[in-house]
Length: 361
Image 1 (spheres, rainbow, N blue to C red):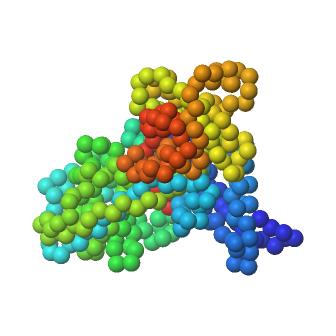
Image 2 (cartoon, one colour):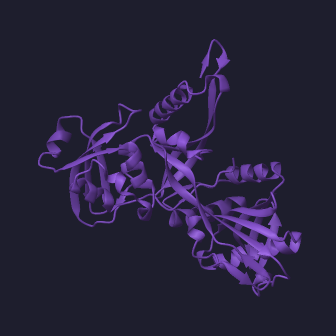
């Protein structure tokens, strides 16, 4: 955003390949959004984001995402949270015991010995465990390793009984040694992996205070708060970190699934202040597990909706929260404007969670 060569605001678009329910899609991660102090509260950011949304939609992208410094900046633009991360602190107040299985592990600084094979293994695991996740490539891991080193952190590859087991990044932050970007490819041995990694860090650095930063699928693995053999474990905190914005509802709908096994349909009006192309009436159909959002533009679409009940209306922000947020976190206000038929069908849709996007900023 510039006038007469003077920059008023900026944002960066980082391209990524995502898996959305196993399908590969392109998406851009918005980062570095800023407005010159002199031009704040004059609509500069609004123009930047609106233009970005249109450009990305024209490229065929169905969503975009960001990690907000302040969520209140992005709520008016219909971004909503769709990913939480877990944070837990651990203190060593004595001589921590070394797990009996520790000798099974080997820890090596740097990228995996066979990075392409490691990426293939990770992607299989991620597609199985997450509704949305970043595709892991050798370039992705190489960039992560360089970014870690630039912040005086260390990328660690882990092997268990000679086979690639996963990875993590460790780096000092304030008074903690932080373990992040944690991946374990064997879902049956995650607890061993995690506490083996902590034992490695304590033996190497004797830091005494650690923070785990993990995706939400680790929740069942983490130990309850309390004292264990020279270690004090503090309560787990859940922190919302990634916000999503829908750019093309029809494309996104093709990746949705329903918890209902029957057939159902309604007409629903979607309000979107940024996209005339996206705002309008849709035919929402559920056929078995398959979901279809089809914009009603006359002709065959309107004929197909004949006799279909009215589902009411919903804002794109509320719909984003319904499709990306966890069901247990839903508030009644999300259903404002929907008829009982529309609510029933939207409640049957399986949200895109859990999500794993771990980009280092």
